[in-house]
Image (cartoon, rainbow, N blue to C red; front, top):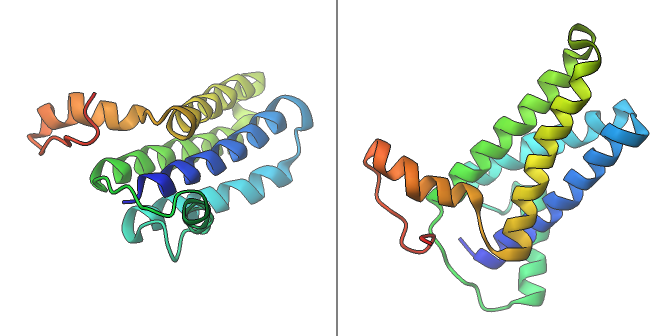
Amino acid sequence: MDEHAVRAQAGLLNVITWIALMNIFFWRDKIFVLVLFPLVSWEFPTSMFFGLAPFAPIGVLGSLLAILLHPEPYWKPARPKRFAWAIGLTLASLCLTWFLLRDELGGTYRPLIGATVLTCNVATWLKSSCGFCLVCFVYNNYLVKWFDLEECQECKI
């Protein structure tokens, strides 16, 4: 996968997490949840199965940004990226679950969702701004050993 496009996608996802954080703590409007969750829940599986283009809308924008800013692709293995997108889908689904259970959770749902979105925010910021993928780090240092997978030399720190 083109690392430039993946980092651009992470930057766009970082903007989405900032919008979600603002909504959790200030705006508190359900429409943001109803718009952002379907977008993200479509983005992650289509990125996992088909790559960044043509079915992942944020991936397409990230790919276009990468072409404009870095015309030469920088290829990296896709398996750790797919694992990262699976974690992102899990976190987004967890946020939606807590949002839907907000009446049963009482006032404790906002900090739970906030912590989950903040985790996504930090992870996307690290990937887009610093080039460090937290999930790739977990993949190489733990999953490779536990499940006898091939280590990704490109993502090794």
